[in-house]
Length: 337
Image (cartoon, rainbow, N blue to C red; front, side):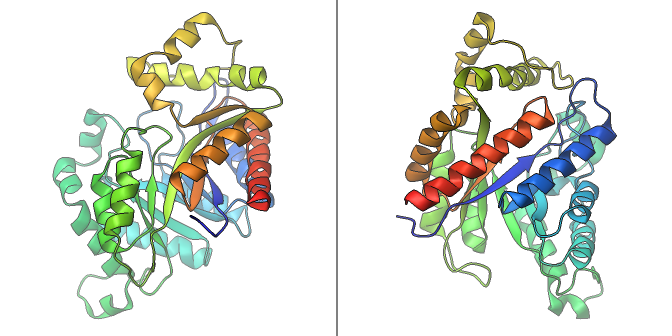
């Protein structure tokens, strides 16, 4: 049983809502990060995605710099950088630079998925599949570029050598669990959408974990969808933007995040579709009291060291309020434990 408090953090896509400019989107993300800092959140991560009109976090490292500049203590990082899209040398240079500008505040979460469709992945990097299969080796390269020992190498990321940038392995299946355990690195599982493999993945990670210079015991982060409002009904209505966003993913008709509408029978029926129902299994939507009970149960089941909350809704004010109430829940559960 866990004896230390469970940390709480935010995973963001810099969602572009209908009628909103990209500048407004980025300023909204900054407002959210500043609120998260005041509310005691541990970190604020941005996810790399491409070719999606409703996602503004494509140039992830640039946006990380923007949010780090506008905050003081909050850790800002990637959840994640999709490594097969990039040269490990360039990633090390970018994050080494960020960590020199904002010391002890930059995280590097790494995943192996493309964060986009097949055609776009091919446009980003023609040898994407080969790079994805080489993920463990590409990770080794990044660790080497950050090491002081690499100073004697012919190929160097000079701005990264000896710079403190914690590396996290991201996963949505069991593959990365083996790798994170073998490397002795913290492991973040995308249970906010990839619910099927959560238990197997964290069991594998904990059972196979090998202590390292970074960690002496496993560290599990779990993603959860969180939408909290004053009442269950209000939260349910706000969540209709998320439902319609997911329908867009399944139908290939991606669009800007739509304003919420009153929950109706058609949307309730969509929620019962087996794939969508499974995808949203760890979605806690409702009043503070309702969500608190669900979060407590999830924490007891997973013993996660950190929850990373995803709130994909239309209005930034609703997001700020939801994250404020979630922070209250986490603080209350800590006091009650």
